[in-house]
Length: 93
Image (tube, rainbow, N blue to C red; front, top):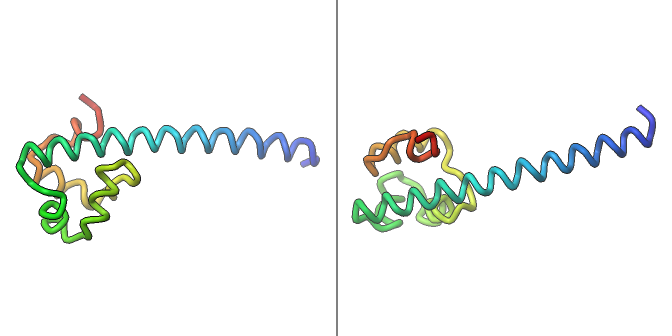
């Protein structure tokens, strides 16, 4: 690959990566808002929710604040504890 082509590829790849990052950040924030709403509806604090999931409260707070998305292996328990639908959490309905 020529140097000019390589630079063009890097610019396109960087722009695509930034687009994915922005999309993922927006998704994480939407999920976090839904987690917070459902948790409050159940009358739980972040600390109580974190204890039920056996994780640090700061980790759970990061999920609610949209800094991170909960890993898939926690989603099942979150859905059960908060009595919400998986489809609702991820915006499929």
